[in-house]
Length: 501
Ligand code: FRU
Image (tube, rainbow, N blue to C red; front, side, top):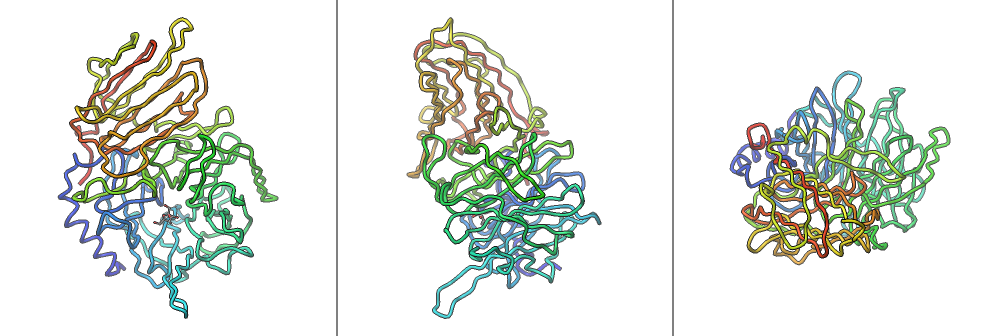
């Protein structure tokens, strides 16, 4: 049965979302139907389509009582909005339906496992939000919350676990048909931990083990955890709160963490081997992965960050977007991320150039705000240049600058001149593999974002921009000189536009 709260959200989006012109949104990155979006939820392939739900507050462009928005797509690029899937309409989730995930049941229905936040007032008047895990089952359109909710609560925590920070279950089905999920928690030391639960039916759960724990080393609470096998290893992805910088590897605030290791299911022991950031840009948080029908591990994320999400424009009726889905692999002990191959189906006109760059120059046909461009740098006869500068989304007053200095191996993205009128972080640097000045940069633009993939996915940097769409220039410059090869494709959706309502 559709509750009053859910119907209200559905009516609201049907009434107001059609007034948002599709050219005011990203074309192939999912943005909210209307209002506010944060974490991706319930990322799944179900009934022949990809489903992506998201943390959603339809009524304003600020975070508010969390609903689940919903969209479907044949290719993770062209999205069609579906009616709001969950609203905070039960006593156990009256404070919000927080992040969670999805799995298909043997009977063909889809199960959503999410965090229910219950607002409680203590006797001394202090408000406390209790977090539990809850389920809803449906057909890809309508979902019914079960009477047994919550299915995991305080009584399922290991000793010292906190019921106030117990969230973001990520579920998967094991080969033997049973289910497992990892949930973020805050143990007695106040930092994060990752709890593994197991179940035969995805409804009745028991605690299995603590997969890993932060010990106050990598931020505090570990939000939105994920745990999966990849190329012979096991990978933990999580988004820690309150991180501290560590050289150029992590940054302050809400960060991302990838731990590559090995896992023995019998003993439940996960052994860490390598740690790294997931994304080195400004706007990236709350990842979630699935295995696609053809066996690829695909990751989505919120292309925003809690520390950098001040509103650019108060008249705008939407806020937040997802990062481009990425194919994951492991190479040289690192997490490798590349745009999903489906992106190539959107390739339009191709332009190719090769030549030596020194003073700032533009190239014929190389411009635009919806494009997939690869720039390969090669030093000339061992003469390593000092600094390469790539400006994108460039107009008379705007540009976003990407610079690379081979002597330090530092790649920098700077969006200080990219339309934001807020006092936010606008710059990030990262250390890339030193190849004597050779570098390959794949740059994806979709109107209001830039995603950079370095050396075939060794690093990724994601950043939103607020630059007017008229600023569509691209220029190349080098202190010293460098040989560049540029291949650029315009990106088009089927009708030359997105499928947005
Ligand atoms: C991460 C997060 C999650 C939580 C959700 C609430 O961005 O804080 O831990 O479930 O957002 O919207």
